[in-house]
Image 1: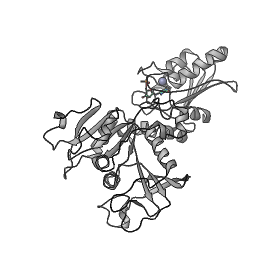
Image 2: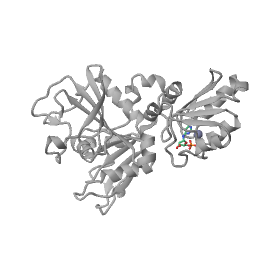
Image 3: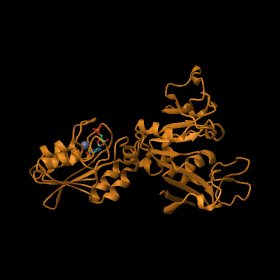
Image 4: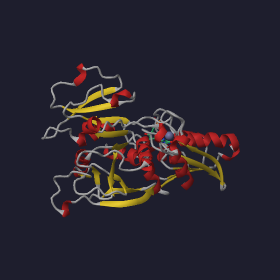
Length: 372
Ligand code: AOF
Ligand code: ZN
């Protein structure tokens, strides 16, 4: 199963909206086939493992054990059910790490197998396997994506000078890491301010992907959906952001009576309206639900202190990724996040720091928000 998990990771940047899944077929302590799911619409992990076994050890498939990181599917989606493929191949036993949270499956795959006399078990390395698919699992169970918030700051937690000057607080390695975060995300979210004042383009730049560029040929990684919150209708089609052809979602509120469609927007730009809050801002909770309906598993917030603070204040962020540079900016610098509702230490947002590492000259901290 540990090997199956490693195989699943090969689909890290490419399977969404599908989950990352790996499969190892074993007979008599010998590995006879390995496979992983690479992309929605292509074969599932089990089918790839069976195909490999058929090539090299066709006589050993009958009676084999399949180790799969996710329960084999029971439904016909873009591809036929894997449970049936395993039944037809006459394997003797299927061990899955976890049940598929997809309501179309959720236990039915394992039942299909056991109904045919195949030993079907689940739960082996479940915690490790669930880390492969934090976004898919959250979308299937809670109906919102898994949300990461990326921030970059000086050692004293400042993101910019008072003047707004902020370009390149962190060095190249950290910026490459951000590109990889974008590559694994289905969508990135920013506010209109980032686009207007920092000229954010929020796209994936192959030349800045570092080691990942060696694994994937140019243009083989999909661009994340670029989601821009523009409550005040300040964006115009002439901005730099709209020069790169990849999907953009401009989010406005119902409070507005007109959409900006009179202007000449490129064909890859879509405007949507999301319910407004009492203070006439886009309801962020609702936005996440809308993104989940569009099969967005993992979201990366790349915004300024206000929008990031709003997401965090409302407990909508799962994970914080903070890059810190060895710089001190001092009292006039801009703060990391604005959270006006927090007035006492007892209200502070509590995080569990899971990982701290060096990236070139900078530090990367990965922490999860702790909620009751
Ligand atoms: C598996 N093995 O490798 C994957 C599974 O549209 P489809 O046919 O690709 O089906 C997608 C659904 O199948 C997905 O939502 C999840 O429930 C399951 N994914 N299942 O047995 C795999 N990727
Ligand atoms: Zn399947």
